[in-house]
Length: 403
Ligand SMILES: [Zn+2]
Image (cartoon, rainbow, N blue to C red; front, side):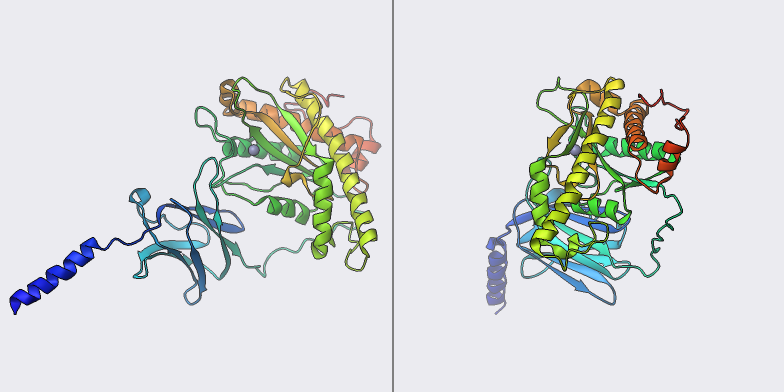
């Protein structure tokens, strides 16, 4: 009897030992990034996996099940909560899924998607937790027409969070140096009378490209400047370049905006496209877009000129490319590749606050020159530019306006 029991036990023990679960993937790491408006959770996987996402209330939590997954060897303990996530819990269920529970601080919207491998990471499950609209968010008060307004300059530090951008030979990450330059530029812009800066990101988190444009538009930005530091296979390549959107990219974008009427409605100075027929809508959008492209070109030339003065330039003409982040049809936009982080000398210089400030100041001077030559109506700069011959020039660091 006891022998039979023993055999039976041994049998099931053997079966348990022999039974190899069909683990498809390992979870290698869980990483969290908190921005002011959203929190991103990234689950690094060894391969493609199916997943499901559930939002549960009382208490608020998000449950992610990854089919056929297990915790990989190097995965370690779940990371501490940040932003909207109070804590992260992980467990394996009988069905062979790995369950990740995110305990939340408040009710929140969540979406998830599988991201395919890039230069730095393999397959990743990304969960974006966005804050639901708060009742106490300030309502933007429009200035009275008689009240000259400040110009708004949107400054966009490229990459961020799980996206490091280009990485130098000595490990310098583009996302870090461009944020430092962007912050420096924002401070310098704020010192200009009649100008105010906003940053599309102000920390180490990723902001989707369309959200960067949306943030600039929500603040009614007059100019959008994206800051990057490029990499090239040839490590001897160095210097800055300035880009605007190519005509081709602009045309593609126009079709897209037209396809999304509701989104386009606030683009053209409050003229709604909803009730316009296709031809009229496309003409209105084209007008707005070619005006923006022309302004982008002129503004980019000013910035390029100042980078040449600073001795930093690689390409002596404004370049054109189909950068997504430049595609706002109604905001003049440029992208400054400040330097080649792949060049060891430039990588070294990019790390120093002095060089970051030098690049920021060249861009600031270009922005200054552009707006004093082309002041939008109703702005303080328009008054300053026409009212007195002597433009206010920053005392610190500015060697004149370059004109
Ligand atoms: Zn970049």
